[in-house]
Structures are given as C-alpha cells and as structure tokens.
Figure 1 (cartoon, rainbow, N blue to C red):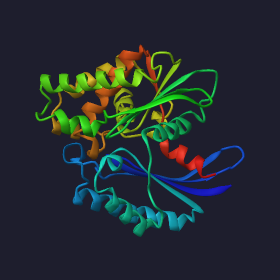
Figure 2 (figure 1 turned 135 degrees about the horizontal axis):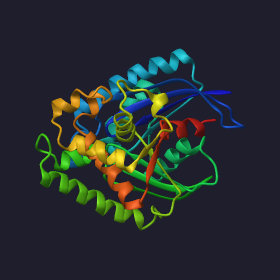
Figure 3 (figure 1 turned 90 degrees about the vertical axis):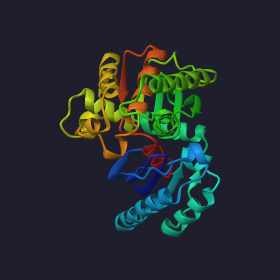
Length: 304
C-alpha cells in the first residue's frame, strides 16, 4: 500500500483526501477526508483576479491540511487546482503561497484533465456494462464525461454554481428573470457540451460534488448530512424537481435553516440545483446516482 494525499482546490471549496492505495488493484482505504469552503473564485468571473481575502482563506485551509498530511505520514502528495485558478491573472500568487505552505506546486489542470480525474474517482466502484455520464457540478465549471472503463469523451463548460450566482442573482429569493437567465446560460452550455460529448446516450447518470449531494440529502429528508446514506443513492427526476421548487421560493435565511445545507453553499445552491435539473431534463435521465467519490479519489488513484 502507498499512503497518498490528494488535494482538490476548486472555485468554492478546497478538499483533502489521505488514503492508502494498492498500486496493483487500485483499492483505496480512506484515512481522512475533509472539506473547507474558501470561495477562492470570489469575483473572478467579474475581475479576472483572485481576491486577497479569498487567497488568505485558501492558505489558512492549506496550513490545516499540511498538518494532517504530516501527521498521517503521506508519502506522496498531489495538489490539483481547477476552474478559478485557471481563469485568474494573478494565479502566480496562489501557486507561490501553496508551494510555501505544502512544499508542492499546484497543478492548474485543464477542464479535460479535471473531467478524467472525476470520472475515474466516481466510477471505479461502479464498473459494469453501463455507459456512464458523469456530471461534476463545481463552483466555476461543470464537467461532462462519458465512458465505461475509460473516458470516451469529455467537456468542461463554465456553468458553476458560484459563477452563475455571481453573474445573475441580485434578489432574495431570486427573481423570475434571474432564474431565467441562469437557465438560459445552462442550456447554452449544454448545447456546447453536446458538441463533443454524447450526453443523451449514456445508460446511467452519475452526479458529483456539493450541489448534487446537497440536493440528494434534501430529497432523502435527512436531519443531518450523512455521507453513507447519500453515497450511491438514486434520486429521481421528480425528487430533484421538488427540491428545486422549494429552493427557488426560499430566502437566504430559510435556506440557512436547512440542516443538511453547508453554510458556504447557502447562497449558491439554487444555481447548482438548477444545473442538475437541466442536465436531467436534457438527457432524459429518470434518476441520478449520487457519488461521494469524485476528483479527489481520481487524484489519489493517480498517485499509486
């Protein structure tokens, strides 16, 4: 077994997975998995730059993660940075800060690389005869990947929950015109994704990331977030539509009172849930298989 540490830094959150991985079989034994909302992508869509306060929040999380990695004795570490740091003019400030704290340079990966990691992490334990469409709804972008034992086609498009919220939402709850603007952007992005990924031809839709797991937790009626109940749950189109309907008419304070909704997602969950609903409607998926295993697991497996 090889002990590895995988870090995924996205637009909304930064996450750590420390695990023992068997290099021959790909078996992964999780030792520590944690997530911190840092909103690294704050304002990036508007300014093109990472905000100083967003960088400091991210570096604070990196310091915490460095302690965990040292404590558990990980032999290898890989830090992957996604949408926000791809888009930022001052990403060198981000890179230099991470190197100073963790001693490893963050890899600012492409959307296609992000998609491949997500696919591997999400489907490693699902492998059967099905052709999967893996959809990873992030803060700045959403990845679409089709394949079975390997990636057949992948596309990353700029419809993350943070990006869409910052771009369109000004009211609480969102006005009808704001919701329509989000849906218009999502449908245009789905058209773009469909140019290279056969999104309507898969047997099984697999949904990843916080927007999807939160919708699942609400659909399941959980009183507290329970990753074991959520992982590999099957949520129907009607259940997703019902949750979206509730969210669309809710105020910030009403959403904040939902026990399974992380405080860092209260302002962006509506956009994320709308992305999921539009994906299901476009693809004709009757249900979504929800996975807690994602890009982090793919990164960890790549280190074995």
